[in-house]
Amino acid sequence: MKIQGRMFIWLSVFLLAVAVIYGLWSKEPAGTTALFLAFGLSLMVGYYLAFTARRVDTGAQDNKDADVADDAGELGFFSPHSWQPLLLGAGCAFGFLGVAIGWWFLLISTPLILVGLFGWVFEYYHGENQNQ
Image (cartoon, rainbow, N blue to C red):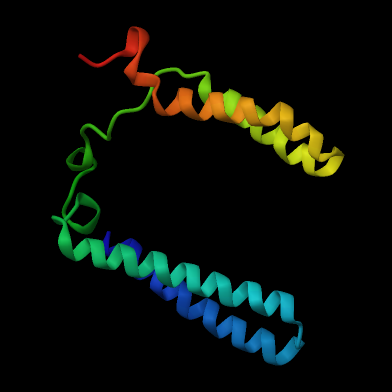
């Protein structure tokens, strides 16, 4: 994580320099604002990674003598299948479409969003996937 933190901090320094030069040269507010926001986001991510790297054990990516196999192992739990993200995505798409077509379209999207969201959150509390 140390390497990633340094990369993001150096990226934020670069973005700050580009934002200042671009702002002074072009006098265009939208691009200058976007570059300053990119600087801020990059700085936040870099600070988080550098701060976290001090608190956790050294990973294989920080060891110059590490092999690829040193970083192997379980990465976490990933759901094998779920229909809930599709339902939630369709509900959100209908919701955004309601802004363009008419607010009445939100009557269709709200139940889809709620069912998809609650189904995804409580997916492992009922049925065949229930933890015991």
